[in-house]
Amino acid sequence: MNPWQDILKFAGLQADFEIIDIKQFRKLKKLEFYLNRTDDSGSCYQCGQRSSCIHSKDKIRLKDLSCFEYEVELIFDRYTLYCSKCRGYRVENFWLLRKGKGFTWRYEKHISRLCEETTNAAVGRLERLNDKTVYNIDFELLNLRLTHQPPPEDLGPDYSMDEIHWRTKKGKHPKFITNLVDLTHRKVVTNAPGRDQESARNCLLWLSKEQREEMKSIAVDLHDSYIAAVKQECKKALIVLDRFHVMKLFNESMNEFRKDQLKLATDSDEIQLLKGRNKWILLSRPENLSKTGKILLEELKGLNERVLEALLIKEQLVAFFDEQDSKEAKKQWIKFHELVVQADIKAFNSFLIRMQKWIPYLFNYFQSRISSGVIEAINHKIKTVRAMAYGYRNEFYYQLKILQRVGFLNSRFWDLPKIQGLYP
Image (cartoon, rainbow, N blue to C red):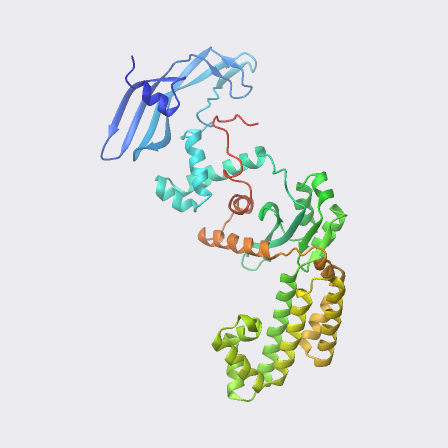
């Protein structure tokens, strides 16, 4: 009886191998398993046909999962077969590894799972691998997932779409990735390079025809090309101009107002309060300010009457979004419009002019109160991932990493098969 049979059983190799020898290297913390094949046949790598006509045998070494703090290597023969169907000599397709790789399939899966949680460099340090090797494994297995992983069936009916910056080369225009987020699961379902109408269409066309028809609403920012793509591919969807981007645009106008007032200020205290380092006083909601912030805000109000007008306008816009009924919201918008006209502040006039063409989508917010706040939170996670990796040079790999880290393209939603090449 083979005393090492239990080790083979533990490793899941008892059906195909028997152990010839085991070498232990204590200083290197390494184990080498010398294995003998029990089956004198194999499958053609090209067509999959079984053949027992062995032309030659090559010794290969495969790095396997570590065991008891020891690195494990498997050493055995790989066959070159004559395939009658292909009429030629072919290297066999063996379930334990991929062609041309020095790792077992399950070890590659292990590396891919680690890459779901940390950077390639960190995985390389943990597993004593080169960064490029980790990158190749992760990239290739993500491609396999993208090709074979079935899409989630319970997506929708509410979505959000926004872009995330990828990179900017010196002297060239910045490049972006458009992400489509399912608001039910709060995950990125797909993405596409660019931030134009074609990018948005590619994202929407990833959904099935039924999913596009069942889409109830989609939140977008102030982006004509996204709206045009939604109108073209998802005709029944309610396009929502969400609160987050409108308030972001208004805060940009508030900041322009602050800069204009700083240019006109003569009092030293007023100048100090209007400087850029104190812009948070005007951009934050009064109820969210600290005790010190509230004191500074009251001081600024006393020094500048126009600041008081600007804050009243901002409060009115907040009141507009806080309404639950669209009819009441329209009344609040009229009041907001009147306040802007009466104050005659240049920055707010520009905001109002820009908002005119978006009014129909703005009021859709009160029919479907979805927001791009979710996708903005996801964008923050993506930026963190990108910063940890010190950026990505390969655009497609960046897209895959987004789907891996904040989407469905990972082992939590679908695990790669135990046997290499055995996909559903």
